[in-house]
Image 1 (cartoon, rainbow, N blue to C red):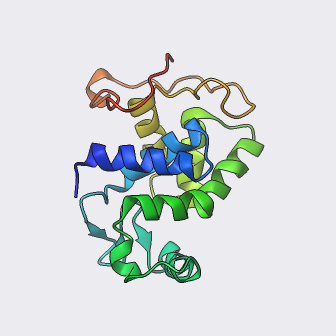
Image 2: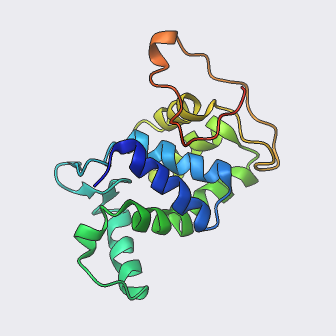
Length: 174
């Protein structure tokens, strides 16, 4: 239960608790915004589920194995909708690795978010996560995140800006 923003706040806190820094946690929130699965949607013709839309041919088998290895009781096909649990899995496995690889390539901010969506989440439209990161968090990396300077902001028309950053999200000047 809970609103999209409440679940994104939970994802943010769980990502921090799982060892990601502020920028990494914000990127995971941007991924949930792109994937649109926080309200229980099942996408890709019934093959993707949860806040991160774990795909049967991709992350879902790994999530099932991870749940068993952690000794977590319950049906992984239902547990995938627990945003804290799915965030812990994403942060400590495939999305955490994609964030590290993108930083090694010198990326940060919205450029890193796009990279993570393309190489970790493996999405058709990875640029949407960069846009969501910019819309939600201002586009630039938070202070002290990663080693590279933030990329130039992506220009957007005002009508594409959407909602302001959630109340729980740290705001950063671009």
